[in-house]
Image 1 (tube, chains in turn red, blue):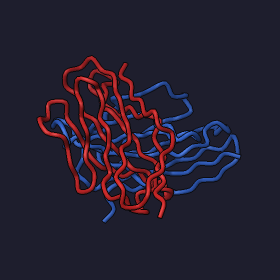
Image 2 (cartoon, chains in turn blue, yellow):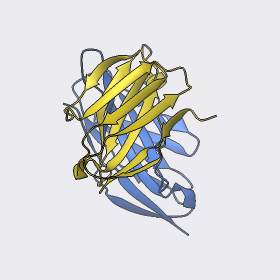
Image 3 (cartoon, one colour):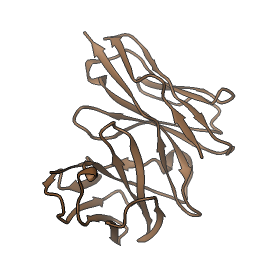
Length: 117
Length: 116
């Protein structure tokens, strides 16, 4: 079974600084997809960024970028120019087969990010 | 203009009761999911339907029964509620048959269930 590891339960960053949230994964499939979601205190799950295993370049979406190191099986999320509104839980997830025809997301335990003024 | 909606947002009920949570998506997706988020924020897949067909059924008690009347709707009925069922239940949807980013799952706002 695939596994997602987020080793940082909590992180602090000062406003306007950059922060890296770690994610490592374990899979034997050559084709896979990695996702990051944000869960603010209001509770909704917000999709941030996607990285495919065959993508030649690291994914970027505005202030979010992925530091994808395939050989090390890591897909760290980088948030540049942190804002107070970035304070939230961040989840790394991998798309995993759960049946012959069904895929679902396997989530890490999450990292709680607090942005301070 | 809500993409994935769930009702109710909050559900407080007594042990032993039966309750339902409804989910609807207007994204034109063909696959829908139920995830459970426990008190430690851990998210785990429960069920998935593709075009009204159950394709994922994880180790979930029989008291939980999903129903998909059409590919835009997925409901979750829970019988004989127990204290341990207290959690946040998320509905999500995606478009399958594609690959990569296009299989991104979009989540509803969640239903916070508290069993007393």
